[in-house]
Length: 322
Image 1: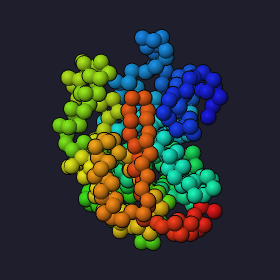
Image 2 (image 1 turned 120 degrees about the horizontal axis):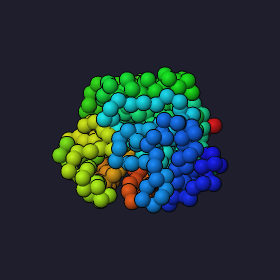
Image 3 (image 1 turned 90 degrees about the vertical axis):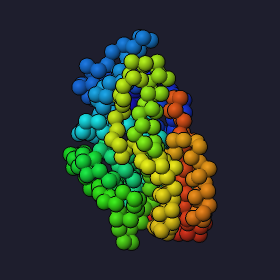
Image 4 (image 1 turned 30 degrees about the vertical axis):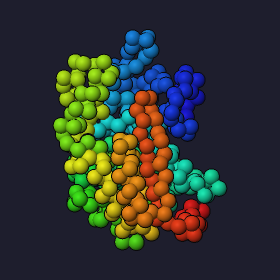
């Protein structure tokens, strides 16, 4: 991480200790890396430099500047209305996966292209593979049910030579399938990751957006369906919400029990956890871990599970991590 950023910023609470975004944004350094960010930066009511996080274009440009400055990604663009994810939280997920892989491995994080992850719902932004490869050298397969999203992700990958040999996108033609049609015969993954659609309907997604703006005191935006971070329907909601999606993922993961070390997913709602644990017990997962994450007032968690026993885990590490 740039010392220029660190020296000018105070550390945020809750983010992973290896997360380079745990310090307040140094907008001067970001603008130096991405001059196009400059028009969106101004002094807020606390006389600090910031952007208007209610402005989707400002959020998109901030993401672009972060990806250039911290990850060396010189082309990054997404179609209108697609998800513009907040980078710090996405980076946290990657670093906690690195911790999972290092556990039982003498605390040594396995690095390099031989370590392969599956990003379920890679989206148009391709952020997880970017952070994962540029931080640890990992390879990725990104899957999605949206052809337009995959087209955008592929453009990002092919426009950045550092990513091109290491990230592959695959279309999931069956929306009810998570792994079938994506994972190829004899293919193995060291981890999977997913940020599932957590609303159960468009109406619920809109209500959630309105509550967010009200909590932030933006009542003018609460009356509108304004999404500063964007998002298509498939990115924001599915029938049954995250509970149904993750339950289906767990059931289908049992069919790949010996072909993936750690299956993981983000869980937004604490009330979803009992259903997840019940499903994991049903499929007889060998080990389950819940990792709490926090970014500001937002609290979420990662649930990870493996079907590999202790001896199988040891063999896996010897074959793939060394």
